[in-house]
Amino acid sequence: MDVIQIKITNFDDEKIKGHRQWFMKYFKKGNFLILGPSQTFKNAGVIIAKTKNDDELHQILKGDPFYPNDAEYQINHFIPKEINSKIVK
Image (tube, rainbow, N blue to C red; front, side):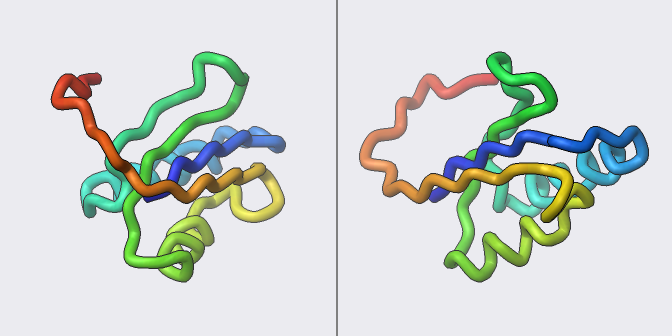
C-alpha cells in the first residue's frame, strides 16, 4: 500500500476538474481506497492507494493532469499490519 501526498504547485481551474475526474476514476476502480484534501497544507491532498506494483502506481500518477510539473508527489510505501474496523469518513 502507499500513502500519496500531492501538493499542487501551479493551480489551474481547468486542470483541477480533470484532477478530480482522475482521482474518482481510480477511487471507483479500487486503486484509491481513501482520499481527501489536506487540512494542513493549501492545494494539497492525501491518497491511500493499493496497486500491484510501483509500475502500476506510476502509470496511474502519470494520468493526473498536474503530473509531473504542476504538483509535487510524495509516495510512502508501507505494509499495513493493523486496520481498525472504525475507519469512517
